[in-house]
Image (cartoon, rainbow, N blue to C red; front, side, top):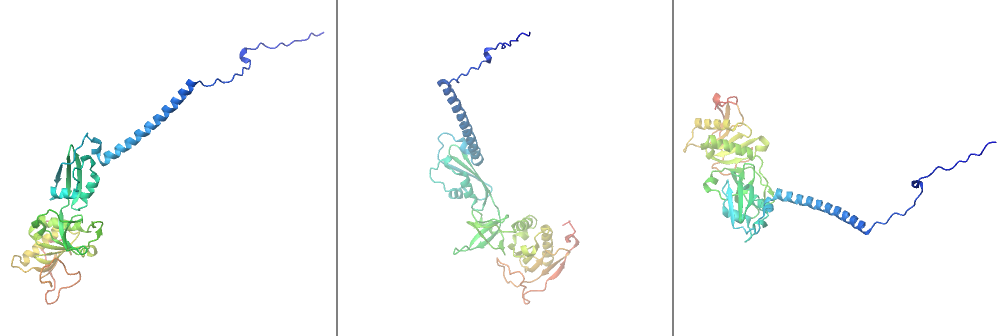
Length: 339
């Protein structure tokens, strides 16, 4: 007879017994610590944002006006305005143009606005303004040098003399000596176009300035006689027309060798006679190149005026001779470089 087998349960540990316990509520001190941690994180974020914004403001101020970052306590009103320039503008012009109110504080100056005010004259190419503490404003100017002049009438105002720089900028004359202005040729064949409070730059002036520079440096006697420079045919034919006391109409190639052309002109004048009693030639065309230059002895205009006849109008047969070809020696040929 089989005996019954009794299976007794294995012994269990207390860890195996389920012990449901409700989580303990956070204490008051714990909640305070959590609030402090959140507040500290928020404060750190705000501090980083403030530092970033301040850095951007400092960089902007340093780029546009670094003087505002170096402000000493109790900056004084502007008592001294010092001028340095490479041209003819003086301290009186500077004070009139800046027009600073009395007792203006040095740190209250809007330097970029004052810089724009100085450059608006056209004669000023660049302007640097610097605060010198406690009460000095230093102004350093670079001026445009005029190479020609013209007469213009704006509205009902009387005609006024304007100056033109080598970059074509047109500006009112300030500070130049009368004898200097008398040596500048007049411009003809140009049209002024209003641009804001002034005029748009005149195209073609770099070529004119190059011709005048070479003439003054190498043939000063000829350059002193240049009275009118016309750009009427510069755009269409690449020609610069000059009226002088020795030749009523000299035609230069705008992109040819100015030194060679001036040497040819000097030779022609030597061969045809020059001097106080010599009659001016009618025309000399230096733009054709080669070893011959068309020369005319007479011209229809009886007296020199600061204007040129329109292109295409031929001199009358009673006053002008047919242009003749003037032969040049070999050293003036287009292939020779020994002038």
